[in-house]
Image (cartoon, rainbow, N blue to C red; front, top):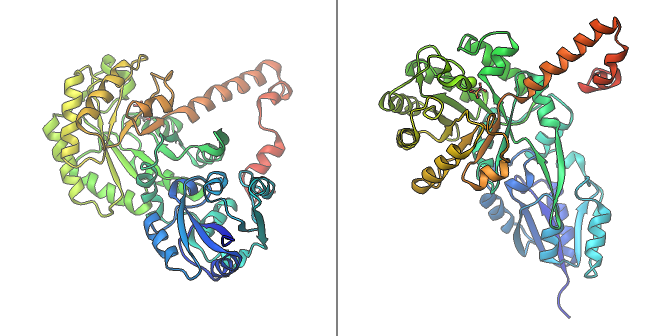
Length: 442
Ligand code: SPV
Ligand code: MG
């Protein structure tokens, strides 16, 4: 008779005594296959591991009792279990809404397999860095990813085979709301969680929420202070809108502050002079830098970058300023040659065809540089469609603030009209809701 097989799944970012016990136990049931979770499987459920997938698989291969190592690409066990079809699955008693003991037992029973549940050793699991970071997140404050790990997470997430979604956050509360929203979708037999991967620190909404015009009037220090406050409550990577970026010498000092704080990417736009919001286009006076001038700025600041993973995003304003498709493409390629890690192409048209033309033509010559889009105007397009056409990072650049203003106006107006608060109540978060919103209030 063939030897029985056993299975377990883990992150393998570090190996704790709890893992060794689990591996010994699982190996005692049969020939042991260990699944190592990929970044994609972990993202949104656990902090990203310090080690790469290859390093973690290698580490696991060297552990006594491990016969095979496979990759687990989804948080759900369903797919990997179906591939491995083990006789025994050894798992702790810590389940969640995607992976339940019942669903796993049912699946195993279809080939006569058994679940061996062991009591979850929280004190030992605590030693594992990614688990520790995740538990901090659950506690709603306290610890957060280190600046290094947060900064690096954006470039890692951009390697996933799907669009990366970023939501605007203009203060810690809007960041918390953006981060807390998610839903589970079934993709065939696999359940995947959908959520915003990253946050966008917008010059428009940062300025507007402090009643400044979007003309680079709000100081860099004030914008960075806001980001630091956001990081206190959020674990997500953040992309900062740096407007024109200013003089290269000053910009490089600022970028270094952003890197240290854990910001993942800075976006600079190829304009000079008094900056105006791009969505105004040529309705106001806005001047584009020359391609050479802007390329030199990119080259200069990239020379002083400290960390490997920080991304400098070159934002091309040619379509905004009616300089034409050829200009947009030429500039994009020369900014990449100058060292830009990604290109943001912006459009203020409702019709996405100029964006699609750009994507097709840019991708013809460059298949790898990430493309960032801000589909505020051409909002009929889904992130999935934009991704299929060649975009990577999709930013919803002002939606949290634009959602808040009409909601506030409506309630204030209603209270004036009815001379009391009762009618406004149905538009409001309940008192229990607001008291329960921030951990530690009640
Ligand atoms: C921002 O959000 O501040 C941006 C995007 O720069 S846009 O407002 O569309 O120019
Ligand atoms: Mg802006």
